[in-house]
Amino acid sequence: MLIQLLTLLFIVIFPVFIFKIITKSSKSRKTTPPSIFPKSYPVIGSSLVVKSHREDRVQWTTQILQSSPSGTFTFNLLFGRRHIFTANPANVKHMLKTRFSNYQKGPVSYSGLFDFLGNGIFNVDGESWKFQRQVASHEFNTKSLRKFIQTVVDTELNDRLIPMFSDATVDKTVLDLQEILQRFAFDNVCKIAFGFDPACLSPSLPSAEFAEAFEDATNISSRRFRALSSLSWKIKRFFEVGSEKRLRIAVARVRDFAMKIVREKKQELADKSSLESVDLLSRFLCSGHTDENFATDIVISFILAGRDTTSAALTWFFWLLSQNPEVEKEILKEIKGKSDMPVFEEVKDMVYTHACLCETMRLYPPVPVDGKRAVDDDVLPDGTVVKKGSVVTYHPYAMGRMEMIWGSDWAEFNPERWLQRDEEGKWSFVGRSLHLSGVPGGTQDLSGEGDGVSADEKGGGWRSKAVQGGAGDGGWVPAVVYCFSDIENERWIPCQDSGQCRV
Image (cartoon, rainbow, N blue to C red; front, side, top):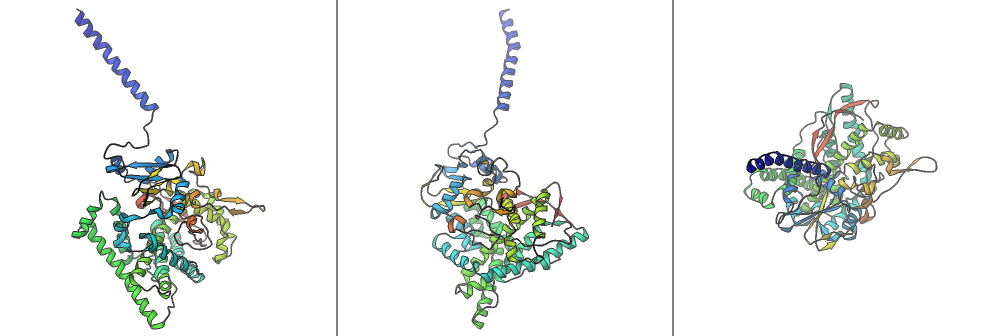
């Protein structure tokens, strides 16, 4: 009898007890959300969870940095390796100014990009980088090159881009704005770099062998850094199979074409003792920098720097305007206050457009993350310990989304955060340095050009150029709106909702 009673009590009480535990556990889960910070395990660290976020790594690391009190987080990886991410302005200033020489691209980056970029400015450190920077900075600060860049861009606008938008308006044609702006940027940068016009923005939107080879070389080179080990791509390169075979073919096409132009210009220089063209390559050769490999490497590096970065910034710029009609009205008002001719001196005074470009690059920087390798042990200003050989990545994308930098309205597209009213009620631009703004390249200025060096490092910075233009009478140009799926790799997919962008 006792046994039966105990059995009955167990049958009745045990389910109630289990229900209480489940309910309590469920409530605990609801009131205590899981931590955004990844767990670290012996030997493997957080390697597995980092690998699982390969497709959304920029957004994921942004959320982690937003949740970190210091804006910095250290990932423990396989076999004790460490990867530090930071959106802390003081740390970024420390890396790019105070201890600039201690944070370099390093041998891993160099070997991964060497086949494509060689010893170009964006793949070297130390004295080689410093020399190329000085050469490029000198050339970019000449009035003749500045005038040449303005002429090239104006020609591409008036002869190709604006007519294409005008035709699309009349024919009610849907355009892939990202592709159009990529072609626009590639035509410009090729003409500026070595005087070659690939004509990618011709009305038929032709396929250009050089452009396609450059695209393949860029994409496959970047994939090397997503491999589990550099040994995997090195083995494929040794046996010339798969993607490494395609990379060899693409790089050969790019470098052979560039080398051909270098030799033609060298021959022209030998025959005439001077060159009529004023593109970047011609200027290098006329300055005495006639080594073919040096000239080829630096030209390819500048094409890479100006191609996707410019088109990405412009694409996001127009997309944001399509979402903020009141901002668009202010830009149109500023444009109408200028003359019909895109005079360079007038462009410098377009402070509202300038602010819109800066606000665009705050939210969607063309280079969302940039990693460096520590040469020696160091300590960042926020106290983070950096061991020799550790990778430290500063995160412009996250910096543009940090409440401690921009305030509670960081998610809003608000160009006026860059402006202030003067005594007459007119807008004036408020400069923000690199380590305060989160915009890669330092204080933005419409008045000239840049050499790719941080503003703090040289007291200057990247500069942007705005050019007046329009399509027809300012009519609507239907466009597919594109958004980033994987910002780190600049891979785009169409948004679910298509829209219209006014040009």
